[in-house]
Image (cartoon, rainbow, N blue to C red; front, side, top):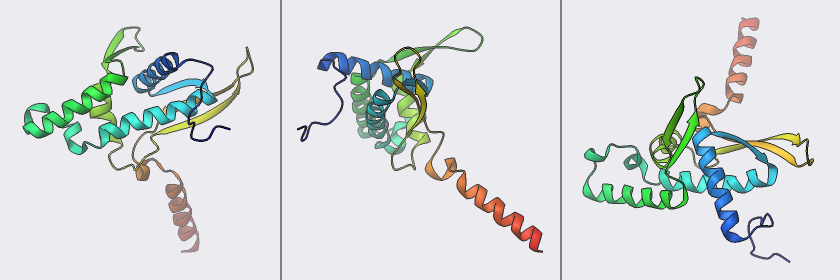
Length: 173
């Protein structure tokens, strides 16, 4: 029985599993969309959501320029920055469309960009889309991605309902 044993082991020791999730989280933040197995995506969701929530709890302090912050807020931001950089690698390199490499500060991206993007969202910052089996070993594959914006902006269903109502009103009157 696995009472109170949370998380998958992936047949790895603790340090290898931690390194795997650090790399997956860094790549998810860098590219905002990665392809991996279903099980890894489901576990990565827990890790990524915790990192973003940690930055989001700062509020506006996370994305306010450092020179405009009070000493207390600067210290809070620095503490959160150190917690994030204790888990994430500081810099990631992404290849742009033209073929040139771009270095991105991952901790700064979580604090400034992602905490601002998800400021009004209460949680659930990632989406998992299942693909199907991998060709080589038949492992179930999926894509995990960061959502575009807050809960009310990213939802397409109300827009469809509104368009349906307008269409019905135009037909009736």
